[in-house]
Length: 103
Image 1 (cartoon, one colour):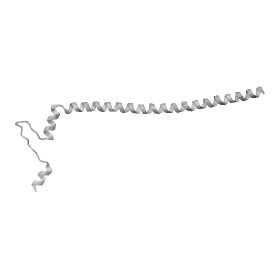
Image 2 (tube, helix red, strand yellow):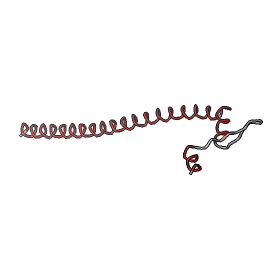
Image 3 (tube, rainbow, N blue to C red):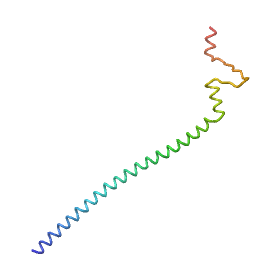
Image 4 (cartoon, rainbow, N blue to C red):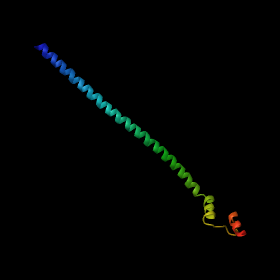
């Protein structure tokens, strides 16, 4: 009877160990999947940060350009029609407007 009981306990122990191992493998697999997903998201966020920093640098350079006297003068002349004292503006019409006046 002892040997039969011993074999039964041996089988139960083996079964418990196998169940524990299966549980651990499943748990570790799920954790590894979560880690991989987090690493993937981290890589995307790091890429977005790099792109944002590059965009920020470009915008800083553009701000510097927009604040130069040359650019401000260009906008004042082209968009606002301002002139310097003593300048005379000559407007030359397009060929289409000249053709309309000929007929």
